[in-house]
Image (cartoon, rainbow, N blue to C red; front, top):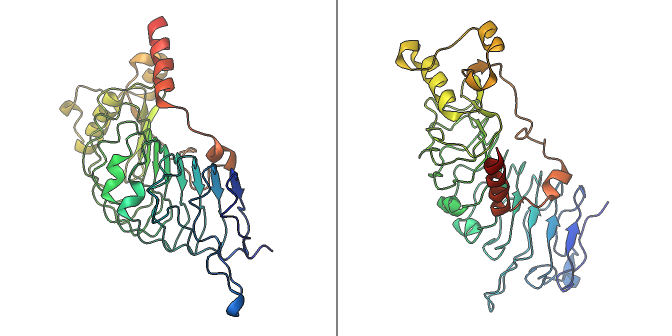
Length: 318
């Protein structure tokens, strides 16, 4: 079994470091006992300016190399994917601010990770996917609101997570999953301006009042929200989903213009006129813990401007 990593910090043309599944790997640094110990080995990766992927998933490491030099302010813009899935002994992260080009950060299953520094989410304009499912954190840095291009925020089974900072500025968010966050009571801010949102999962939390859902949508696909009690509402339009939720929560159909129709009527009417109905609870494949294949995580997320131009094209010809 691989128990130690050779010194790679001077391999300046290195693009990929993938040692995922190395269950015996306990350190990136030198674990040679006695005077022969090389204390400078793999301490800093700031010279790896071509590095695009660093995957240490399933290893036994308890810390990472640094990504900065005290004498230089240079950033490592090349690193796109930092994958640390199921690094169960990882207790802290270095300053990740220099990783300005990061697009995917996967810390799912890091059960010993209890805190994330505020600077870790600074200068992350390209970050698309943030997965902290199963981490032992109590709260998130307030700088998460700066992740303006974030598509996915996955916090499943963060059982010690007590609160979230206001995330209403994350207007490009598509998936928000806090399923199993049993200590989470409230979600600050509104989702009204999140026109790309398609999946909200609050199952297993103590969030009795869901955030305000988007007023408009730019995605032509089914939208879904799973409430804290496990009830699921699906439909094409968020406003109708909101109406159906209001009916269920108030228990008074007259309180909303929406009318809950029988399944027989719904099946016989045109799809675009259907009202939203609660459906059976089921787990979203896109947010299920462990559901992300490695191939999925290695895909560089599509650029948002390209995405928007494609949507605009289809709107113009429809």
